[in-house]
Image (cartoon, rainbow, N blue to C red; front, side):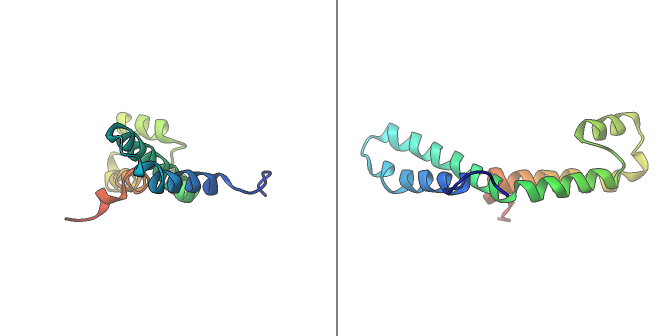
Length: 114
């Protein structure tokens, strides 16, 4: 249960992003348009993180626990110590999926193949 009334954080972010896209980009000042595009990009990242973040965090935690580590720092220590040398395929899969998840939020265009 969310303790806040409408609009939600996601709705607020979407509303500001849409305003920037429709009204702010209509301003003729080139510098202002650039800054509006930067803000639109940042808000788009926030929207994707709000939409996918909890699911990605749960999946990442599940992958870490499958390797027998508690968190990323524990994973790094296990890799450095050689504890996971016999499971490097699993480690690579975990790291690759983590990178994919981060790209899906930061810039999903990078995931598209050329």
